[in-house]
Image (cartoon, one colour):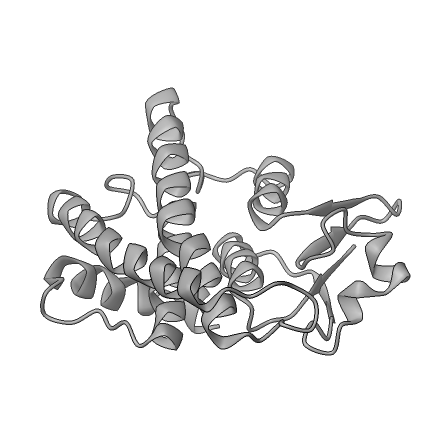
Length: 203
């Protein structure tokens, strides 16, 4: 079993932190995304979307999309508390906040970066104005996150979850957009500091 990844990429970081939280070690294979290695037929045969990370199982079957990979490991190596929640209500809240943070935060930030920087302009149509619009949407999302963290220790409640992993990766990534978590967001600052001390993040 191995994971094809670019370690510094936000999606790969999510999987790495998740596995570290569960104490699972998996062989890693670096994929040169900037060099276009993910565009080769050999990689495309493993990944239906041509992106990293991709988990390849011992039987040769593959799973792409970071949260799908995390769900696989959560089912294969169950532990308490689960990073996806332990009760129906917890699981629903984790799923809700995971999607909110991913779509309004992390995914939007990644779109902003790709379109403003033009880093992959050799293979996709980059629209700088859309990048700046996406950046503004991230800025406008941060108060929602700060308000939630004013009422709970973690993103989806009182337990650390996969939603926190996504939010943590997002908060680090937005530095690339010159967005900082400053005194305007004291609850995010406090949460970010606490999560930064977790062994899974420091590993």
